[in-house]
Image 1 (tube, rainbow, N blue to C red):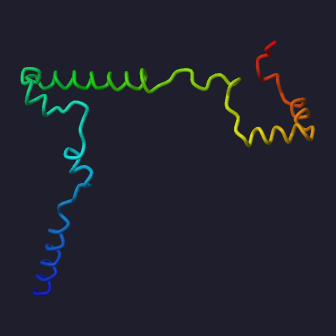
Image 2 (tube, one colour):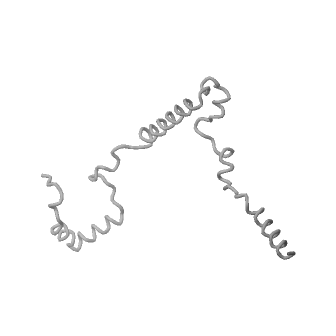
Image 3 (cartoon, one colour):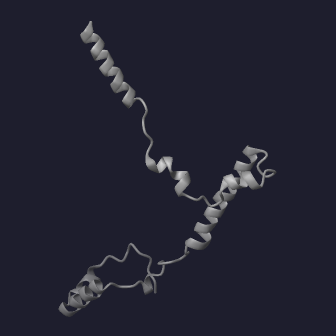
Length: 124
């Protein structure tokens, strides 16, 4: 009986140490180390009439946050039509060196002669 009691006490002490899982530090200290675009706690504190209806406030908060983020990405960060004109595409020094060495040996003309052109639209 004493052996059974000792084993049960040992198992109980191990279970007491393992019972509470610890959250990652990045999750537990997220509110102290990060600043959202619009601090909601300040809105709740200084504008109580705006936050009287919590559901409506968060609906509009998420909608405005999404539109501001999408507008930032598409209006400011996204540069349209960059790299679409291959006539002025920058050529690397390795490309220029390889092309000049092929031109010196005559292989460039042979490669251009056997190149398949019927996949692409013919420009004249």
